[in-house]
Length: 320
Image 1 (cartoon, rainbow, N blue to C red):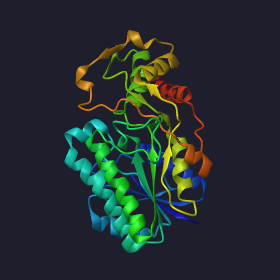
Image 2 (tube, rainbow, N blue to C red):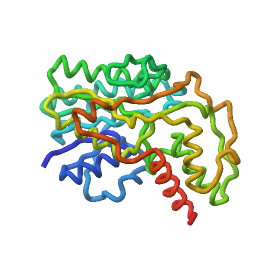
Image 3 (cartoon, rainbow, N blue to C red):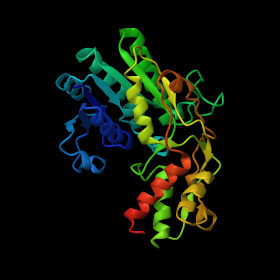
């Protein structure tokens, strides 16, 4: 039985990855920060099947202890301050956790479990003001937010540890991936939840920012499989994980409201305060390398994804 250590297990990706690895007969250990309020909603259905330990990406000692005691075969570093707008309000925290936190996990592995395999959750936000379309593994980075900049650091320190210490370290450059477990602050879940609220008569309209921004949206449940596949290869390599299809926020609104039998134009208001200081206009990934070398392809389409999210939120709000 292999053992996997997952940082950020309480998040969307962490919960889907834990499910996936349990299906592969792994021992799954999740690292969580000490908090006076436990937020384990995404993990409740796996109670008794996974182990949880305390640790923090800002504290080297806790990471050393975690890796030393758990003795993982695979380490998935998914923890981060991952909400892009917050990174402008808390740039120092974002750099500390999303950037330097990666170094600390790598150090803990290097000192305590160098034979383990390491996965770093890189992000399409690293491409930012894109210099090539579509974006692939060789596309130069041009981040446009403190979050994107921190992710670039995390990506390159992973490459550096791979090359400096001959560790099995790789990064998945994941494009936007969503699900009914997505946080409410992210645009896809904000929209699906507000659609359900409007359908239930609990609100009248939704405030939005830039409707022209385009993203490559996929299903998180598909993407965690690619993470695992990367760590099963003979050699560590980095991969773009994406659908290869770009949609605008306007398209997302259309798909979500249509799933509830409504027209988005009747309910959407533009709020200038929701416009980013520096926008990333268009992201679209080229996952040819992942398809060729890993055999990975996405299964859930954009329309199916939004239907899934809206239906889940309508059920939660008691809409038949």
